[in-house]
Amino acid sequence: MLDRRRLNVGKELQPCFYIATFGCQMNMRDSEVLSGLLNRAGFTLTNKPEKADIIIFNTCSVRQHAEDRVFSLIGEYKKRQKKKMPGTVPIIGLIGCMAKNYQDKIFNKAPDVDFVVGPSDIAKIPEIIERLLASKKKEPSLFQLKIWETDGEARPEEIYHTGFYEDKKHAYLVISEGCSNFCSYCVVPYVRGPLRHRHYKDILAEIEEAIDKGVSEITLLGQNVNAYQYEGVNFVGLVELVNSVKGLKEFGFMTSHPKDASSDLFKAISGLDKLKKSLHLPIQSGSDRILKLMNRGYSKRFYLDLVDNYRKIVGGGTLTTDIIIGFPSESEADFKETYNLVKDVGFNSAYIFKYSLRPHTEAVKMPDDVTKKEKEGRHALILELQRSISERKRC
Ligand code: SF4
Image 1 (cartoon, rainbow, N blue to C red):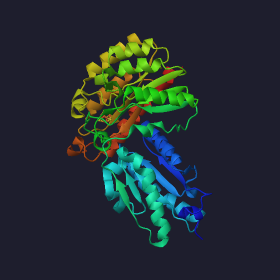
Image 2: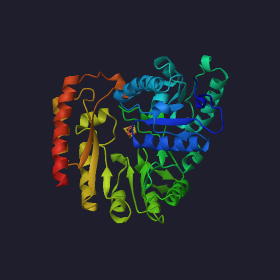
Image 3: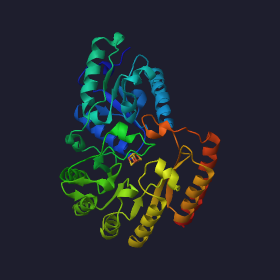
């Protein structure tokens, strides 16, 4: 028997959707934005994928492992629903970075997927789902419409104002989209497009809307927040404006790029009463040779001077980082430099990843010549070092 919701019949029971989110805070916020858009269009959010009429995978392409997980989950969720609700077949959507990365090729890799939507086309999803539901209602047994939208260049500002926040107290808030840095290992500039900034007045308006909903803490998000620039307001200007918003108790930001971090920013962290005294500053490698190959735009010395400056200006401020182990051609000596840097700096915590080859990027042209065993060995060593430092710092 077909569930009535499957066919979108009967006004009393609206189709419900489930979103599985992978990757960073940007994706978490995008899932909220999409939930708000779908709620507005009359769909209901569920936390039970096996009962959803529409299952959406909001994906990440930063590492191969995250992509593989999505492909295996698509089939798994479908099987689970078949078992729990025989006769029903969900509409499956794949959105986010993988959508842009693979575009319509997704339909070959994962034939169960019905629609594919890239990060800049998120506003089109409610209408795409309506079209799919209408087509399914007409010919449920022959339903095979596939829709993809991955070429959009900009998101409409309105999508950030649906008022949907998962957390009652804390909200993520996008200040800029995309990235133009082209670090040689990173797929983000290819799947999220070039760096674009939202108007600071729109950002402030969204913060006020969130506060009206009861939110009192926010995190400003962007791939490179320090590069923020809109009509003469830079990132330091923006955090000063945010600090003055009434009703806001505390805020932070991520992610910073060392080449755009400055003493002015550290003074703002130190001086603004609502801004958290913490900084996430990805180093990625302690070897100048590898940093150059990564196209990071700074040297180890530059990074260490920044850290000194930060600690002098923001007394007691916490410092966290990202590190990539096993970048092409990383030798034992390069790794040792990273290891020693981690020991010397004493980060409060660090996200340590094994290098994963990504399509489109410059690094894909370099041989992935650090063996799996070497990557795992170095990863374990540095993880253990950081674990002991983090523990010491917590005491
Ligand atoms: S700064 Fe580099 S690592 Fe970060 S998103 Fe941009 S290209 Fe990727």
